Amino acid sequence: MNRRGSTSPWRQRGIALITAVLVVSLAVIAATSVLDNGHFAIQRTATLQDSEKAWGYATGAEDWVRTILQRDAKENRYDSLDEIWAQPQTLPVENGAITGAVIDATSRFNLNNLGVSDDQIPVGTGGEKTTAYLRQVRLFARLIENIEGGPQLISNPQQLAEAIRDWIDKDQMPTGGGREDSDYLILEPQRRAANRPMASVTELRPVLDSLYDPRTDDARKVYQLLLPYVTALPVDGVTPINVNTAEPALLMALSPSNSKLSQFSELRKERPLKQISELTTELEMSPTDADPTLVSVSTSLFLLRLQAVVGQGRVALYSLIFRPSQGMPVVLQRSTDSE
Image 1: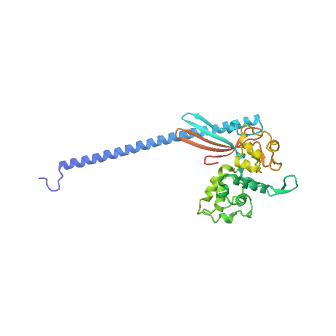
Image 2: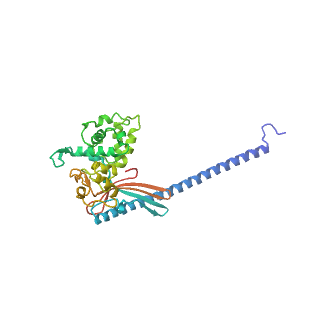
Image 3: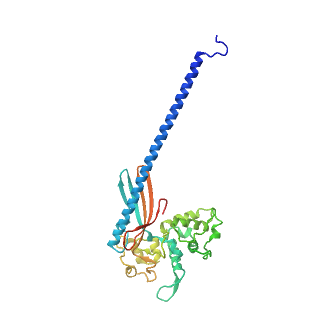
């Protein structure tokens, strides 16, 4: 019998064994953790390297597009959907691919056109006058009428145009049914009118939030509805719409009930207009509708949408490219989030 207070050798061996097992277990856990951390670090490094390569490919493709646009300007003085820059491209690269598309930025309605001066201008041949702003409002309203579901979601296009104008103009005087700071400060979150031209079409969203009941989803629905047809170009003055590339809904808004324009919409890829004079001779547009401040057959602004995928790396690039009359096109804006 063991004396009181003494410990059995078997018990001592058991404690030692348990301790050894615990030590080994802790060592295994620590080693596993180190290996996992090392694996994650290697994977993270590889992903960063892939992302850097993807970014390099993306900017390289952007430069290639600029070269294509410069070459196109030397070949002709019009821009249409049959030209090489307008064709979506997929380029294979090592361990990945680059996909991209270029669109004519003036194929959409420039929301900043609604900030144009309110000066009176003559229209037509009868000596009547209107304002440059009202001409843009009418065009914007007709565009909404031509978009499927537009009249149902946007019951008052003029009020929306006025709200956009107030977002752009520098004063705090509401334009008709427009909105200024006092209307934005009651929103959640609070905002103020930008009082400058829109830098991105995403600025349309707070304008819509000020017009629609926040308890509904209408502001988001209207934004998604208009997104394919509008843009926000950071340039001075009004940007005319290129009839050779314009979205059909916008094209038909230029000259309502013009059957020639409807036919041209179907054939323009094969038979684009090459001169501004053809708007009146070929499409039978009135001199008022064919005003060069409203319409064109060429453009100097292009939107590039590009995605480069290399291994685990992915880069999305959105660039606004300006092509001058001479020289290399330049990038005016670049984003990795949205247009």
